[in-house]
Image 1 (cartoon, rainbow, N blue to C red):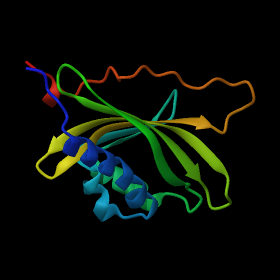
Image 2: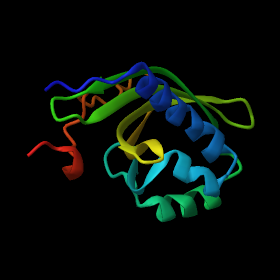
Image 3: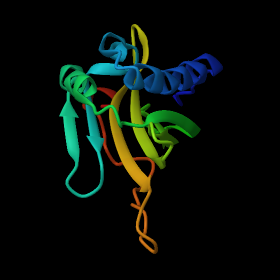
Length: 154
């Protein structure tokens, strides 16, 4: 049987992705459970990545972020479901720091439907800009090859 995302699923997924900016940028650690699963893994960067395992660890990062951390705007989201029912999204983000400097990148997410709604179970955040003139951008295949055990069909 083919699994299909309903219009309600898609709206809830987009809402979850949009909530990230509101929760993270405002330092609302109590709201992180509106965005992430308890066991979320968040990886930031290319090469050696900063990694956060679990919502509690990401909450500490949220509390300790610099005042210069950009405000995030999530745009151009695509949603895919693979044959195992794993839902992945690919979004661009635009970041604007307090001085008005623009940054940008991609969020590659795997979402899980929980009793409370759709939540991000895995996030890879890849910066794209700023970068040195002539420097390439990270190339990551999408959908991601990452498989979360609880959504892989037997």
